[in-house]
Image 1 (cartoon, one colour):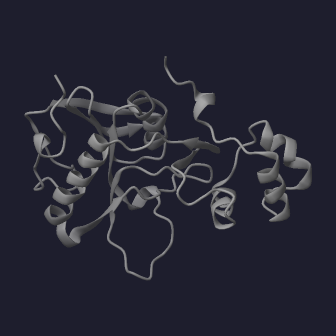
Image 2: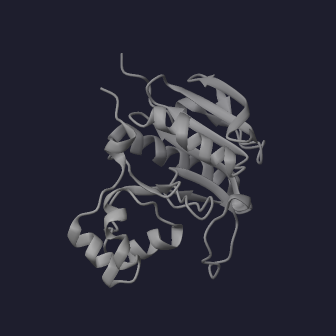
Length: 219
């Protein structure tokens, strides 16, 4: 049975809502609104983590003010992420940074954590959030999350004008390449089979073999 949106939204207990009020994250009159699904800003989301109300080990991300619970990472998923990072980093070198499962702030209400983000090179003292203009490429590895990644999450990336997004479809053994963001969609979408190659549009000299980072589909 398909997972509904309500199944993946992080809910808060009465004790957690009291802790939010005590920490000054929400007003006392908002306890019930939080319990009913009140949306959060990025600042509130970060405060929930800083105060320990959201545990650092929770697999969550913020999209349109909703705190989404992400599925646990399986072996195939993690293996693919590891190989994208292993191949992409040396190939790009000092021209950019490869961020692995770190946050990207799309706007005041969305802070997803893509599997891979190729971002602008920054100094060690630049600890500001990574914003859309800093991003060259996002890579999402998808298995159980495929419909969500291709649907709602892709729409958020397009609306934020992320120039290029790859979805590594582990179910089919293929890569969906999205470029040309227009509104809440991408104008250019192409599917590359497992035997093909791909290059980021920002770094056309970087050529990756899909078979080097997408495991073969189980027969």
